[in-house]
Image 1 (cartoon, rainbow over the protein chains, first blue to last red):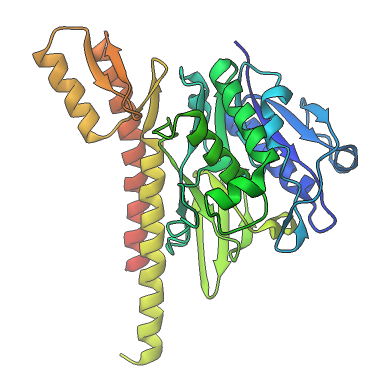
Image 2 (cartoon, rainbow over the protein chains, first blue to last red):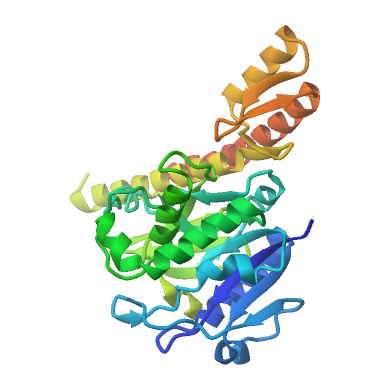
Length: 249
Length: 106
């Protein structure tokens, strides 16, 4: 039974995501100690510094999606099932920094598919509790674990279907944002594939720093951030950083 | 107390409160533990339930994991050990953090 981490990373004209990936891989190696496969394109690959023993899968990312009027190369997550060389895979956003080994244990369960439904705002503003801007609960595709088999395949096939007809599903579920989001694609697919009833989830809230938080320090153990006049920090706790300027710290 | 000092005190209290809340969240995340391919929360409720069943019920016994799936527990001593170890690891870390908050408040 093979286990590993699958990361997606594509530079855009505005953001050097490969810098974010370099930090993420370093923490994965130190804390999760699992084999890593990076899905990227040739242009991003050429910019990466040597990261040690890493598998690369080069693809041409699908273009066309945007976020805040900037190019957003996020639509290839539905291919995780086919691209993963592992029996059990942890798929993570590269801006989710594993400062602990908490996620590692979820690869040792008998669940076929696990995803988190909740995020925790580290700035105490509960920014993510009011995001029910749709008729369904959103999931956070930031971190998901799947084991190859009929059930996981069915879910990913459903994600592909949702992606293909996303404008329709977007209207059907009255989702506020019109751009493609993996969070909603997976939420819709899980609801459809599970007969519109409860599905299994990760019992963790993803610690998250909202986009207006500027990262002022990034160490091996944690991050310090600033928003308004407030400065705070956390150590030995996983952190999902939404402000991509962190690559300059 | 002038308004400047009051604001400073208030800001400090806010920062400490946020840091404390984050430390508790960190502890709660650490309480999640996988045992025999199922996910549990190593909190007081689970520990007490397993301890009680160990004392009052023959093995194996059955409990629910975090997704309400039933799990057979055939070695309660081992399970209890895992739960208590994880619980105390999380609480020790939270306790240490709490001490630093107390210092910041002095």
